[in-house]
Image 1 (cartoon, helix red, strand yellow):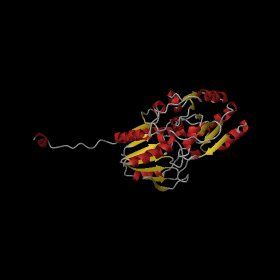
Image 2 (cartoon, rainbow, N blue to C red):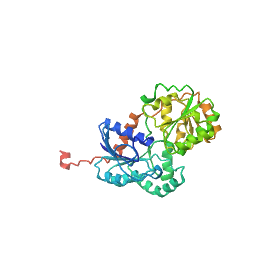
Image 3 (spheres, one colour):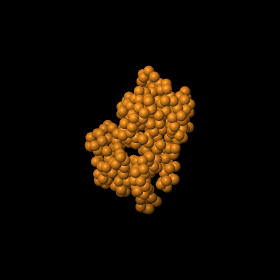
Length: 363
């Protein structure tokens, strides 16, 4: 198949959506498909036009106020001109998806939504309310809609009256299982996230006075980093917090493997890929309830908290620190790619039926 992927961002940008599109695209090429990726992140790193491991990549210029929505009109033109068998658009909270739906025309359209319903930022919520009818039209235009979790599928049904299939984000088990941990010399907690307020890293920093024996490693970068450093200084734990910045994919598993506890206290998530990575590394996790992160509570190595007070975070770490996670039920990439190939085939119309003259059939 000739598959067109449309998404807001692509590596070197990091995140769950970016990881899925990257892994899926390269693995589809490995199975003999042709894949072109169109993004709205020109100028954010990476070449405007390049080929990576067989994947054609086209980055378009656009507007992304506060790093959101990614209006890139060039995406529409390229989708209109593409001779694709399937268009696969990603992230209902961003404008490339409805542009892809508009440009696809009669081409089969698959939409992966990563829907979390709201934002922690008031102006983004206002924009979402204005944009929501367009998002709903785009999803109802789609031949197949995909959610990455049962929680997300339920929210799509309740909020947008859209029916979706569930295909989780995969992980590469070989990258995380049996990895030698880093040698830090002291027990440490770990957060891996884009550093924005809603990801909740500040709650872990504020809990450190209740967790004297632990340091904290924070992997990732973003506009909230300076504020996090200030909170660490205010709280008197700056000497115990290390901001690692962006950590290379090859180096990150060693940090997971060495952590005593991984914490994901985000208020908005549709899946939680970093929780899967931590569990694959054998590291127990503390998650915040109220989003798709709740789906991980069935794992023996995960505990959830409703409030993010220092006391609640500290108690959860104490509760989970000695548990061993179950990593056997995690989705791996071969199964995920299988599921998307089926979704693409199901989105495509059946081949025309040949009709034969009646006299031939009766001879």
